[in-house]
Amino acid sequence: MSQARAKKIKLLLLDVDGVMTDGKIFLYPAANDAMFEAKGFHAHDGTGFSLARLAGIKTGLITKRISETVRLRGRDLKIEHVYQGAADKLSAFREILAKENLKPEEAAFVGDDIIDLPVMRNCGLAFAVANARDDVKKEAHVITANRGGEGAVRDAIEYILKAPFEDKHQ
Image 1 (tube, one colour):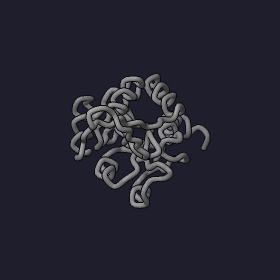
Image 2 (tube, rainbow, N blue to C red):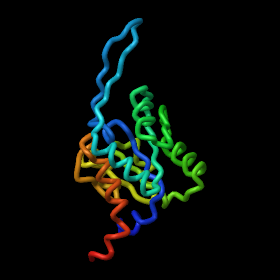
Image 3 (cartoon, helix red, strand yellow):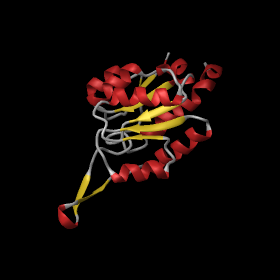
Image 4 (cartoon, rainbow, N blue to C red):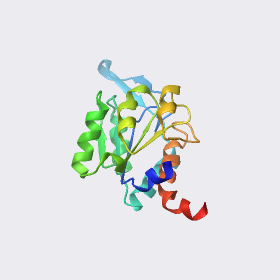
């Protein structure tokens, strides 16, 4: 059933903290009471974004936090949609669908926490990372083999890319 959903996907959207990262946020003091933020991203996920782009799948990030690190990573990976400060992720999801002229069933979302559930409930294919909250795992169509920040995004991308070929092997 999930493979049939995966065949329709033209857009992959993701949460960031806990999905593209392990969820840890490192804050370092900087001048004038400012903070410098650091996050770790997995190289396998970066390669996954390249594979998605080669396959014609557009990508995007929808995150509640605002981070220069995320902006830079999005630019580095050529991610088409980067929505930060999105407390209402479902509205951001619908805005991206409208921009891309896509239907909800043509979009997948990867999440890890309850703030992601509204999008997961409205997209065509919902992924939860292996270390997602239990409530999120219960509502996902697919749970990745790897944890957030440890290749989970690559798992989701490969699942989508392999879907058209799965029927031949069943």
